[in-house]
Image (cartoon, rainbow, N blue to C red):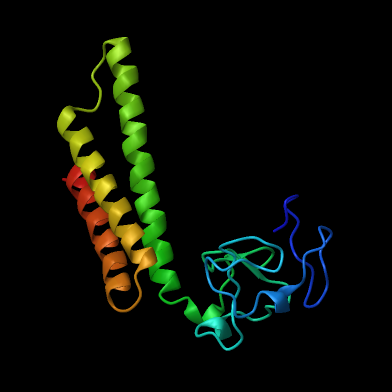
Length: 170
């Protein structure tokens, strides 16, 4: 990026700030001054491992750390998404338990101010611990590949079912 923060144009096209396009960055390493005089600028190299997961990279830009920025940032090839239904269900359940714990805290505060009976400390504690555990497991499930991710998502479902059964049905 130039001093004005402009992004380079397409391959071979100078940007508004006069920077060269992508071909001038190919092969540069971190810390090596670029053609525009910016130290630490690093670009992808053609044939870099993992690049085939992106469908169309003609307009993509990469940050100095190698993360994709721009219009296609955060979009991955659909083949990388595994366990979508199980993780989606566990995410909804984890979010619901977190919302339920928050609603119980609000109900406890309202009951305390009105001087009436509300949820007890044990109910709040079980829901809070369950919500924290479900949130942590869901975060792990969303970020872990292989068999451990779906197992963590299954753990979220079991944890939420246990909390709801123990506190609301027994």
